[in-house]
Length: 123
Image (tube, rainbow, N blue to C red):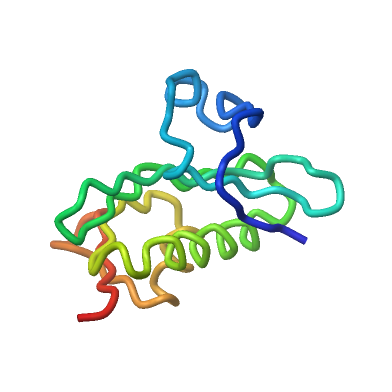
């Protein structure tokens, strides 16, 4: 089963994002999906909370093929939970149909017929 947690200092984020993962990221704003039995990293979520009641979801990246849809589901659910209480709006690009489908099931909408999506969280 996939679990999603905050990134730990020992997580090799370059496995998920070769460019961004090599940077010194604020791991309080990085979620890692992993197999709870093997500890294998399955993907990650890179978030930017700069205030203004908006969180920009920079990346939602599964790195596995088997169970990719379920990894997306767990990562989208986790980013919504992480953002609750921090933001009233999530902004993100959703270029992959599996990601779009999961976001739409969670209440996201497209902005101006583009891949940019928005999700309101509370008032």
